[in-house]
Amino acid sequence: FGQGGGDWSDGPYGIQNESDFWSDSFYPYGFNPELGSVGVPCAESIRTMFTKPGDQNPPKFVKNADGTVTEVVPKSWEFHKYITYTTSSGRSKILSYGEPENLDEYCQRAQIVNFTQYKALAEAWGSRMWTKYTGMLIWKTANPWTSLRG
Image 1 (cartoon, rainbow, N blue to C red):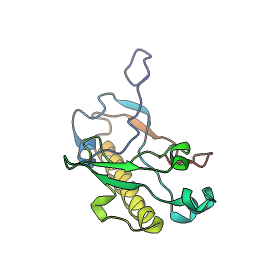
Image 2: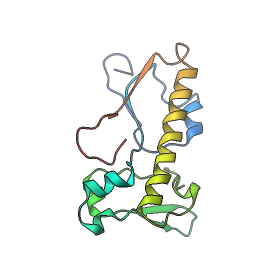
Image 3: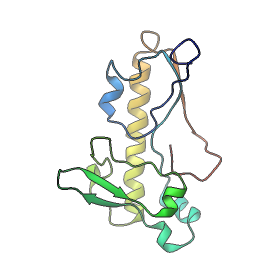
């Protein structure tokens, strides 16, 4: 579809470096039928989703010897399709705002990252409207299932 000739091409869906959205090599096709990013909700919603206290714990950040970060998440978060806030190069967008000490701080940082991610995406895409791109659809802006995806 996006590739022309009927082939399907969509995404990416995970966390991105905001500067990538402005790159000439980011998504080479004129129309993207689906794109999105991360999407952890506010802490109140997490507490509503997960009634067992242990399931409400935010991801733990493991700092690796090479300087990258790995997120370790509860099984309940995996079940609800959590997408990491760590880039493919191992940089945590959450830790950019300091290490969270609890669920409220984690979700607050996640909301900031969600905002900056979608803001950069929309601004970069819009800046090339009609010269490189013809349109975009944001994926799952109103998810019908309690999911931890964008």
